[in-house]
Amino acid sequence: MAIKVHGGLFSTATMRVLACLEEKELDYDFVPVNLRAGEPKREPFLSLNPFGQVPVLEDGDLKLFESRAITKYIAYKYANKGTPLISQDPKEMAMECVWMEVEAQRYENAAAKLTWELCIKQYRYDCRRGRGGRVRRKTGQSSGRI
Ligand SMILES: N[C@@H](CCC(=O)N[C@@H](CS)C(=O)NCC(=O)O)C(=O)O
Image (cartoon, rainbow, N blue to C red; front, top):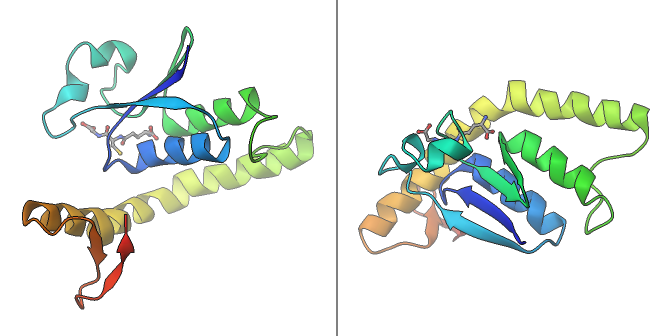
């Protein structure tokens, strides 16, 4: 059975999981969840994650939430596929875990806000006005597609 990712297209936590699956060159089905319509806060989604948030990964009979737990699972389970993402050596793995914690505790908060303000908000604004597809800086310059 194929891996399934329930997530949102404007969700940085979902993007973390999709980036990991892409690095591992794994096939997966993306199941879009409508965050604006409050879909994660209702059944059947709550049965997948009682906290009502995306992403959720399904791999066979395993159902997982929390994006970093998901990426660690993928890195271990599919260690021999695609890009190696986690070391099998305990000391190296410990250092990787230290920096994963630093990312989660010290970096994520600011990075998620910046991604929202500089990228996603502008993209959604452009989409509503039929100019979707470009990411623009405040100066009006184009900085590429997302
Ligand atoms: N710590 C969680 C955070 C998940 C999270 O914040 N998800 C957001 C989207 S990025 C969400 O589902 N928001 C909808 C809501 O809380 O109603 C993870 O890393 O998976």
